Amino acid sequence: MRIMILFFFILTGCDSHNSQTGGSIMSAPSTSKSQQANGTPFVGRVVFMDLEGGFWGVITDSGKKLNGGVPAKLRFEQQQVRGTYLVKRGMASTQMWGELVDFTLLEPIGPIIKSSKNEM
Image (tube, rainbow, N blue to C red):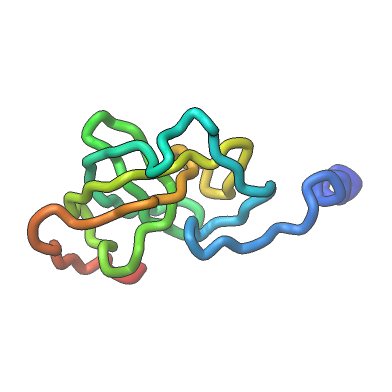
């Protein structure tokens, strides 16, 4: 078992912490050239996922899960947001939830919702 773990780390390199996603990234970032320069537009809501230590993500109105690190000022359960994102291709996260993205724009829709889960 130790040999398998050692082999895994040799192949992937050391984990580096990414404060944007709150997870461990195991490869260099890249984006698809076919995506728009400013990103893919969306409207959705902020959610707190109590997995892998807990993290914040966005579920779009079309049901897509976006894992890109939500800024602290928007970390309120069910906060409506809109914005744009670029997909990070060829990457993995310890969270294994949703699609890894870089938000190129993320802003609230309407007033900020206060909740007890803020700053988790």
